[in-house]
Length: 148
Length: 136
Image (cartoon, rainbow over all chains, first blue to last red; front, side):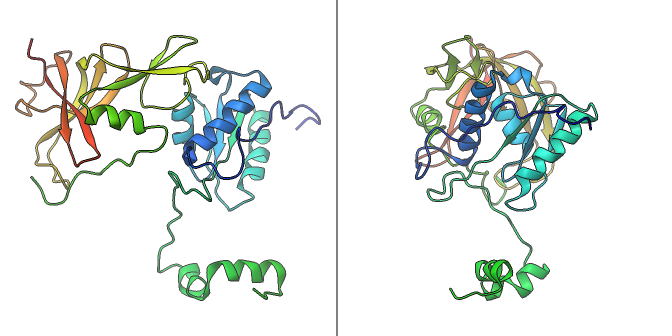
C-alpha cells in the first residue's frame, strides 16, 4: 500500500447523542452515515463498499440505498469498526472498491430495534463464563482486579 | 391454516406511520421532496439522494404482479400451497406480499396482472398489506 494513498474523507456521529428513544438501531446507523456523507460531500451512488457490525452490511446497504461491490461484516466486538477501517484500506489498495462507508449504531439505553447476539448454550462461553456473570468476566480479563 | 402464526412485524419510530396506515386501510409510501423518488420500506430519508426532507402519502393501492413463487412446504401461519409475490406498485416501488382471493396456481397468477391491496388484520396493532386480483 502506497503511503498516504488512502484517506478518511468524512466522519460523523448521530445528530443527537445520549438517550434517543425516537430512533431505532438501524436509524442510528443511518443518521450517522447521512451526517458522514454530508461531511464528505458524497451521495449513496458514490459509495461502493460497506462495512458494519451489529446490523448486517446487507441490511445497512439496503436501508441507505447503497449498491456495494465490497462488503465486510467482521464482528469481533467493540474493535470491529477499527478493523473495518483497516480492511477498507486494504480493499481500496487492492482495487476491490473505491469508497467505503463504515457504520455503527447502538440503541443501548432505549433498546429500540436492537439486534441480539445469540450464543449457543453449548458454546465454551455459555458453559464456562456466562453462568458466572459475563460482564464480570470481561472486567476481570481487562483489569485482573475485579472488585465490582 | 398451519399451526403457529406468521412472523409479526414490530413497528419502530421510523415505521410506525406505515403500520398506522395499514390499520386505517391506507397503504403509506414516502416521497423525497428533493429528488421526487418514491420509496419503500419506510425510513426518514431518501435512499436515492440521502435528503432528509421526505413526506408520507397514501398510495393508490394498485399495482401489477411482478413475480412470484408458489410455496408447497408447511410454514407456521400458512396453508400450502401459497404464493409469495412481488408487486410493483403504480407509484413505482416493489413490495413483497402474498396474493389472496384467487387459486394459488400459475393459471390464476398471471404476470403483470393488475392487483389491488387487500389488508389482512393480524392483531389490534398490525395489519398486513396483501394483494388480490383487481376488481376492475
